[in-house]
Image 1 (spheres, rainbow, N blue to C red):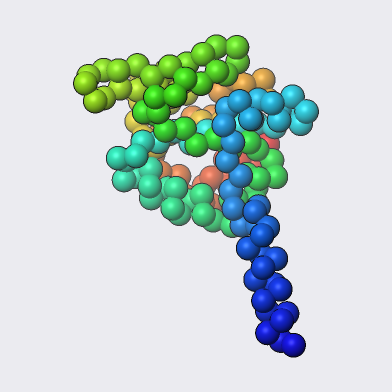
Image 2 (image 1 turned 90 degrees about the vertical axis):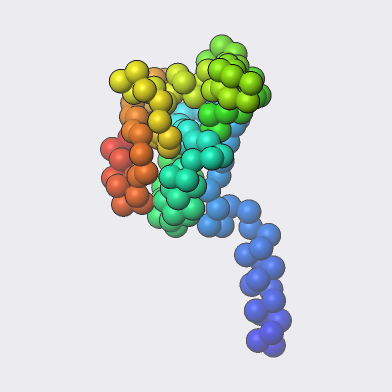
Length: 154
């Protein structure tokens, strides 16, 4: 009997997609959802080669409290600054801008990660319900610090 209950619990946990997982949206999805239910958007701007981005992704965004607050009160968007896909947001299409043969940066990443004329990774940007930038910070942000920032941005 205990085995049946245990198996049932494991199946239930495995088939519940939002249990303990951070809901990640595209810009288009977040904009559509915000039409029905306005919430600020949290944008994590990163690259595949940035070790600090990976540290933040694997620590801060795996924290259960952070996940719960983000899922309940925000639309979370993970933006690879070097994506080559065009992104339409706020009635504007943003594109990848090459800077060399194998290098470049997406226009939307530039728009959201530029602080004092510099783009660094990781960058966390929070957009208000009117999509204006209400918070930006370069560098790793720990879970407790992020929870404090999110509390002020709700």
